[in-house]
Length: 367
Image (cartoon, rainbow, N blue to C red):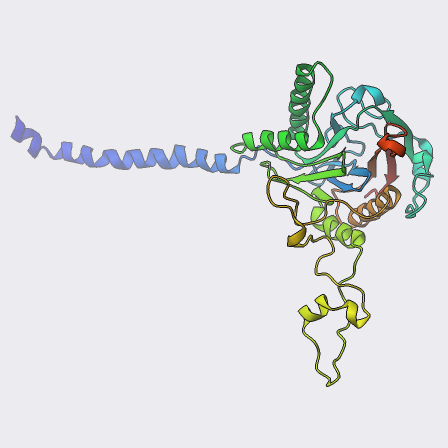
């Protein structure tokens, strides 16, 4: 029997046909499914350009209101998942913030009549584009997020739930500071690094030292800066704001020595005051290494606040958004800006009033 099986040619043919049959199954069934899996994209970019500016006694957060899907405009009045309050007296300014924490868009029929750029010194006078200032017991921390709208909304609900739980644990007496909210948001985003939220965020708030702004990537890496941008069109808006908020120009003519030889650039940078020139620096926002603290309180290598007033910051942001709206189709319709100011200090270090919050609304190009 063993010899018959070994010498049977039909059995050998069947044994050689089996691998080819399995290969055909792989080609016709497994290969199409793998290509379909490669084409599957769980994310969608719904546009949105968010930014923030930190000042010495204020912070400004801005976002446009256009919601897109490719070349399709879904709505021109979207702010629910773009600007929302993470912590701090939401119930004390219900006219500015809705029940779910999102910032309310100012509604005024007269606001669309003016299309002029606000001046650097007269921004708050345009009351037709702003909600009346609201006094708040504790300065709110605002998160601006752009990217996939559904992911931004899910992230908003998770962060607000975590912070509400923290408030209840402390019997409603305290909430997270802007730095605490920044750490919580970074940990939440990094916990989803395997399948991350398609959300690019900015945290803005006020602490005892002034404005605080943190900018994030999709998996929670963040940095404290003075001017931040995220979302669609940030590659255009960030250099515009950096240039407009820069206070020192680094370009000037090199002076000649007596023999006609030009001094080295580093020597000019160090000894510019001796030549009667303004002091030059390579980066107006850079902090010298000797001024950075070492240890737990190590300061960032760049300045974390701008040297201007809140009115000037609002005017520069509006100019930047209008420049980007001319070139980016996913940015437009309107720009909404939230301005949070600290209560001023009087004798004895006491505040003459609580922090205030204002919401401004300016039109952008409607493509």
